[in-house]
Image 1 (cartoon, chains in turn red, yellow):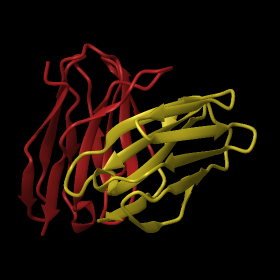
Image 2 (cartoon, chains in turn yellow, cyan; image 1 turned 120 degrees about the vertical axis):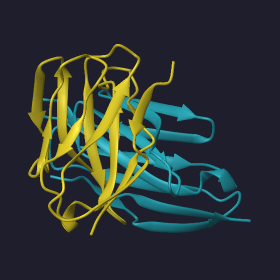
Image 3 (cartoon, chains in turn purple, green; image 1 turned 135 degrees about the vertical axis):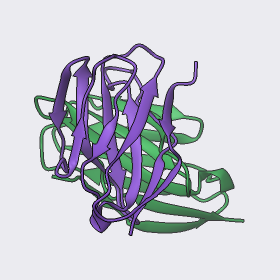
Length: 113
Length: 110
């Protein structure tokens, strides 16, 4: 039981390139989400999903796409990377309900040159 | 809208106490508290539900006043391991999403 896993751990892109950040969970939970964290700032919600085939936008969705074809996987796609997307990206799951906890993956540190 | 945390930073000596406050502008279902060490992912500490509930986690406790839309985290007899950035994540709205504050950086010195 690995919880929430993310790949890669580090990535450097050039402006305009596209890439996909991978996130997987083995807890069979419906809810997953993506956050970004900029230096000295809190976590801002990008997109979230309440189940396979269902996604919705969070606070800062522009420039990112998500899909949820299976319960286990929730990839985040950067369509055309920009320097403003340099950040640490955390995937989280499951959804906090009642006494449920929300687990964050280890994060992907992305630099866009 | 992000919740407001105060103070933004605090430095303590080992054994001292600290309080971190979190205030939201919207009605809340619950408040979640996390601690993040440098270079690591945030780690869940506790969740506070409606009803003025208090909870404890070792020597860390918290309260939640849903009428005032506020929560406070109490760290008693701080240990070196308490150092890190603390985030509150109020849960509110129809989608029940967490909106995190900008964090409180806590440093515990020997």
